Image 1 (tube, rainbow, N blue to C red):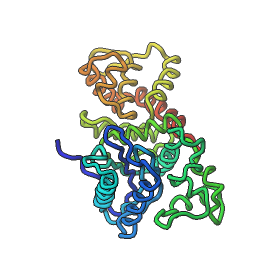
Image 2 (cartoon, rainbow, N blue to C red; image 1 turned 60 degrees about the vertical axis):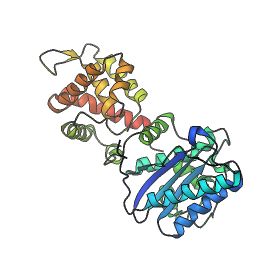
Image 3 (cartoon, rainbow, N blue to C red; image 1 turned 90 degrees about the vertical axis):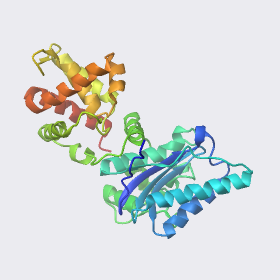
Image 4 (tube, one colour; image 1 turned 30 degrees about the vertical axis):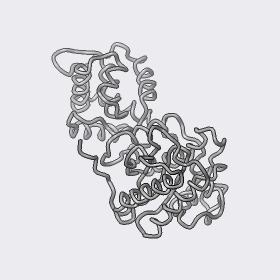
Length: 335
């Protein structure tokens, strides 16, 4: 199977991540962490990357980077290879340490960038290492909660965001938590982790959809339906529980709603549920089939019916847009 091309171009912000083979420990000592970060700093000095945020744990790492020259892959490959050689030499071992090449996903919207910062910060809390990410010394939240940090950490993006959010002239470390937030919701965590698993995608619609009026949301869904080729799921933007929760609210108001995508009518809520899980949660056909106790072939037909109805049934399209608007407000609340 051919490797997935990376969306690595000059100036792009990237979320890079990897973990140990078979979830083994990759950072056993403080010295391991320091050496890994020294390799990161070396690539920063070369001008290949900027580090905007990071978190290192015993079994994995997260780096939020700016690819300065479109050579992030080269920089990360160098970091991993040199670290593995150093790690193995010190322990008189050989063989793989990481599970493979690092993963990376482009950060394509401001809303997702903020969510990703919270996600990266919360890793140490989720691992039970600290109760507050600002207390974990091996992540960027530790440094942003202080007035200075390592010279290889490019603080200006985060500091500019905090100053703008809090309407202050100079960066104040105490305002980091107010601007960024110290915890990630289960829905936000799900979206980040689904994007980490999925394929590289084109544009992230979050910034355009958050706060948009339902007609604008409907127009976006219609454009998406026109372009869909039926083979790839949508980019995950809202979580399945949120979609299903708001569908339940809507269904209670019109439990007998029927649609007619073909000559045969069927339950409108079933079609809308399947279609939104595919287009908005990015679930695979097999995952949707399991959740709805359907066959995969039936799921395919329902997805096709959903996209047809979005384009030609105004009532259906309006309900789909209303559910999406409500789900976005729930999963990405204004902080």
